[in-house]
Length: 293
Image (cartoon, rainbow, N blue to C red; front, side, top):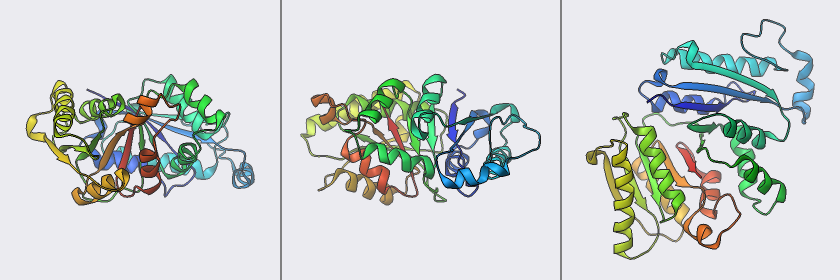
C-alpha cells in the first residue's frame, strides 16, 4: 500500500536527513508519495538578512518568500528522490510563512493532511526537543491539544550506512501498542527489514509474555511473517540507556516508541512524552526515532 510522508525541509542543503533516511530505508521509495514542507522563518537575523536574496526565477510549485538556500535544499531533496526512481507526480512541495512557531506549524499541517508519518530533520528536531523538555509550558500543551498530534513523528539524525531493521519498545501502554501497529503498517511488504520487540524494563515473566503476544498479534494483522519477528527482554538502570545500548548492538535503522509511557497513561499526565522519549530525542544518533501517539 502506498504511504504518504510529510518531510520537513530547512534552509540547509546539507541537512536533508529525513530524505536521506527514506531513500536508504525503503527498497523502492518511488512507490510512495512525499510532501516536502518548508516553513519560512522570519524571526531570526539570518532569515531577515536573506530576504533580500529571494529567488526571482519560475516558481515550479514553490510559493511564498523562499530564500535561495531553501530553494536549493528543496531541489536537492527532489533530486535525491528522483534518483531513487520517485516520479515527479509523487512529490509535492508546500512552502508557507511561519505563523505560530515552527513545531506548531508542522504539527498543524500534519493534522490537516492524511500523512502516515511526519519526518523531522535536525533543525526541526531541536525545536521539538525544546518542547519535550518543557512539558509544563501552557503554550506548548495547547499546541499539542489543538493539533491532536495523531500522526507518528519520525526524528532523523544523519543516517549511518548499512543499518537495517526496526527495534520496537514495549511497556504495556496503549501508545507502545500503537507503535507496534505503525511499524507493522510501514514494514508490510518491506521484507528486507526484521522487527525486534524489546521489553526494556523489569516485570514479571507472565506480563512480558503477554506484551509480546499482543504485539505479535498486531504485526500478524499486517501480514508480517513470524520469521521476521523476534523478542528481547533487557534490564538496566536507565530505560533510555538500555534502548540505546540495544539499538547500537543490533545496528538498527530505527527505534519505535510510544509518546506516552505506561506511567503517564496511568497518571493521566498532560505531558506529550515521558522522560524516556525526551532522552532518546536528545541522545539518539545514526538511527531514526519513531514516536507514536
